[in-house]
Length: 507
Image (cartoon, rainbow, N blue to C red; front, side, top):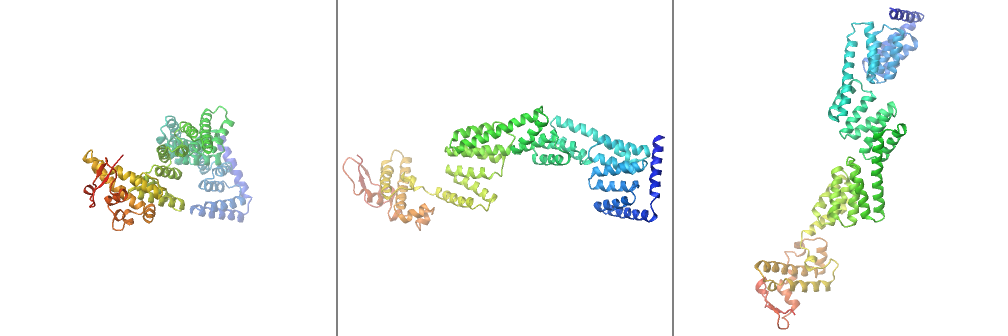
């Protein structure tokens, strides 16, 4: 009864104050209200707010004007101003049910479930038959149960179910609730969706300030995103606010250990202490495997140190691990290509460089390296004449002649007759030695060979051993034979030559 009398008195007072306005003013205020309603209906909520505000300037004692402006604020997600206008409307007319409903919805949007329930119950006290208020109270009952369920799911680390609950129930009804947003961030971190978790925490911080909960969650997300510097700042701020926050203390210790191992490794590498660098990077890798990008960096850095020690297989393995963790890590891809190249695995190097060129097609250095390695691949598929003669690419003419003599004697078929297989191998090598000499002893052909030309391109129409077959070339070097007691080499009958047999003696 007392509440009812208060409502009547307040309503009467508002009507009396409105009665003091001239009919023209009242009509003008109503005109602004009508314009506001039309703008609201067409989704022009900012324009509607201006119209209702103009109406309120004329008649500040109209409960519907405040309630209507609150409705527009709700659509603009300005819940603070919506709640303020609803409370003003209720103060002017405590029997105005719409104001209670809108006030409840404003509280509900930001997750203030108790306050929202209170407003809907007030609406029912004015109008016990209000179906909307009854439905909203049932909705709050469901939200409270889902909130408890989500908390339990997070405790059990059932992150997928927790994310489904918070997304499809809690935040659907309470889109601006900071607590529910942080529940979602926890679920996302559990599902390793760190970018989205960090973004949600950032939104909460901008809107609701920096509590220890949001600071810790964002610090954790940044840690997993390998942003160690920012993670450290967030965790230190948590500990400043709450020195007993154990989770922050543990995580900050990991951050410092990882940063220390990386910095120490980099310093050792810079000073040329490559094994010490490898050891430092290895210590960091052992700290925590759930920091993909940072771990990828440590593996890639360790590969660089291994390459300095010519441990190319280790470098390849570490770069491969880095790429598993971060498939778009161009430095790891480039470094692995270099390691493959150093190992003579040109096809693998070309594959990596081609992928790298696709990822960074404007990098002229990559394209130039790719052309060089393709040429090396092409060379690797030809006979390696330098290797056949046992010389380096810088060998001069005299070294080439000496190498030919040595290898021709070594592989002459008559000297390798222990078995049919040995003889067959010797015949092939004897021909290859002759071919190698014919190319490398000719300056023009050697230049083309070194430039990567195919043998067919060098010897138009096919190799001809410089115009002589292997037997003739051998005869040119060793003449008609030497002193007694040697081993006869009548290679013409063995290698397809038609010249006289040459007798060479070994002392």
